[in-house]
Image (tube, rainbow, N blue to C red; front, top):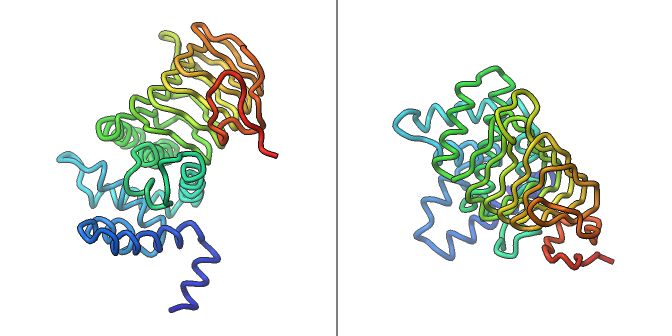
Length: 272
C-alpha cells in the first residue's frame, strides 16, 4: 500500500495532497466526514472527484446526478486536458488567494473553481456538437454559482476567479493562461453584433473587481485592469489601465500581475 501511494504521489502530487488534506479534515471535523468521503476519499483519481462534485452541484429535478456524472466521466475520460487544467487552477488559487490554505478547499467549497470546471465540461460538450446539453450546464452553473460563462468561451489553465459572484464571460471570449479575475467582472459584447464580439484576454492578466471589458478587443499579456474600469479599446501588454472609459495610467509593474495580485495603481511588487 505504501509503495502504491508513493507511485501515485509521484505521478499526481496535486491529487495526493488533496487526499491527505481530506483525511486530515475528517479527523479535525467529523461532521464533514460524509461530504469529504463522498467527494474525495471514495474516488481513486481527481477526475472521478471532479465528475462527482460537478454532478452533485448541478443536479436538479430536470437532470439526475447519475446522468450528469456519466456525462462528466465521459468528458474527463475523453480529454485529459480537463483534469490537467483543474490541477493548474487549484495550484493558482492556493498560490494567489490568501483565504485558501489547502488544495482541498477549491474542490469542496470555492464556487469560482467549481464554475470553471463545469464550464470546461460544457465546452467539451460544445465541441462534440452537443450544444443543448452544454447550454444546460451553463444554465445550472449560472443558477447555482452565480457565474455565467458561455460554453463556447475558451478558458486557459491556471485560472483564479476570486469570490466569483456575478461573473459573465461571453461566447467568443478567450481567456489566456494564469489569469486572475475578481468578482462582478464582465467580458461582454457592446451590442447585437454577431460572430466574434467578445474580448481576448492575454496570459497573466489581472482583472479587478467590477471591471467591464467590452467588445472584440485585446488585452495584452501581463496587463492590469483596475477595479471598476470600463475597457473599450485594446490594451497593450504590460500596462495598467483604469477609469471609465479606461486609459493607460502606467506600467503593469511586474512580470506576473495575475500572480502578484497587487491592485494598487502605484505599481506592484516585483519578485527578486
